[in-house]
Amino acid sequence: MDNEYNRYYIRIRTILGIAPKTIHEELATALGPDAPAYRTVAEWAEWGFREGREDVNDDPRSGRPVSELTDENIELVRQVISNDPHSTYDDIIAETFLSHGTIERIIHDHLKMRKVTSRLVPHQLTAEQKEERVKVCRENLAKFRAGSWRLCDIITGDETWIYHRQIGRKSTNASWIAEARCQRNMETKKSNGTKGIKLLHDNAGPHRHSDVINYLTEEGINIMPHPPCSPDLAPCDYWLNDYIKNRLTDQPDEKSLARAVSKIVKNISEEEFKKTFDKLLERMELCINNHGDYFEHLMK
Image 1 (cartoon, one colour):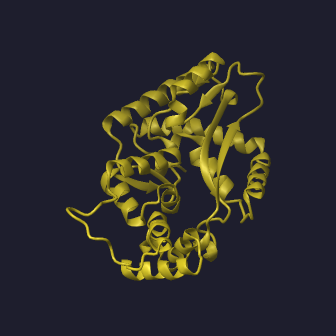
Image 2 (cartoon, one colour):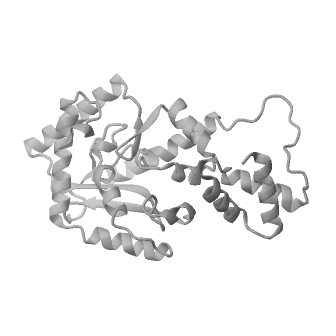
Image 3 (cartoon, helix red, strand yellow):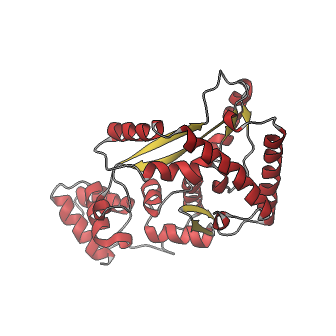
């Protein structure tokens, strides 16, 4: 279906009083990745047909056509992936309103990224990134082995998108729309105050902000170094995200979704947490032995 047919459809549905969001869902269900982006549907519905426009063709343009492959959009996609390495194409479309094709070109042609074990990571680590991964892993492991750091003092957290409908598990998932941002914190045991805490965060922008760093320093919380581009060394990324999502069922609203997520997390056994943090040390060793490159294909 080309743009003209899409716009005829948008026009008819708009005349019938259908909201742009619903129109976009209908087109996405019917056309999949070939559907126009939500922003495009909204523009035609709100700025065009609702204002009395009759013509479904593009307005005349001078010069080169407007491209979605702008520096701004490339950085926007980069930020979405940085905030949640588990992001799917649907996640990124929802965040950026860019088309599937544009996002695909940005990820593969401009960001040079690919999927590894359900996470988006750089297609190839640079020599500097590999060196940094080895350096950080060696320094962290040395502190654990010397006894100056303990696994039971680590608290780690991250954010992810969790949907009311569980994507990829049911045929009806093509029509999901609602989503809720979920922040998870993992800790191996309760601590008294902040003394001795080692906070393990990835390198997302909010975690590196000076206000956050200053606050943690003032509170006496030690920040455990984490190398860049390393979801394979972050417990939330390599375990908790999938653990939660694989156990969720469809939920009718945000409150029930939050309750369901909280119940899953509260029911995780102490042994499961211990096993996950023990694997963190194993993963550091694998990173070192693999000269800083990604190693999950070597995991037993």
